[in-house]
Image (tube, rainbow, N blue to C red; front, side, top):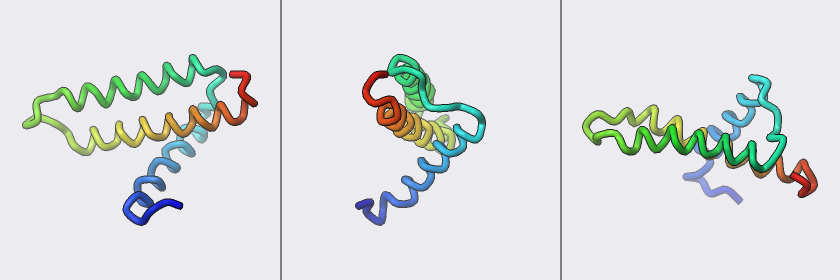
Length: 86
């Protein structure tokens, strides 16, 4: 069960996963591909986090965090769809 405070964020993450599919990005073809995409999103988030606090773009940092979560969900979905062979 998703608790009330998490629901809006979970909806955003779900929409981001759906958006990636709408843009033509299918499930990951391998665990390596999924990890690489996830790592790329984490690196983008890291760049925002490591920016001087006075110059941080909080909206952009939040967007990157949502994308990290979405790619983690997509990674799990890809594993589930691959019957453990990926």
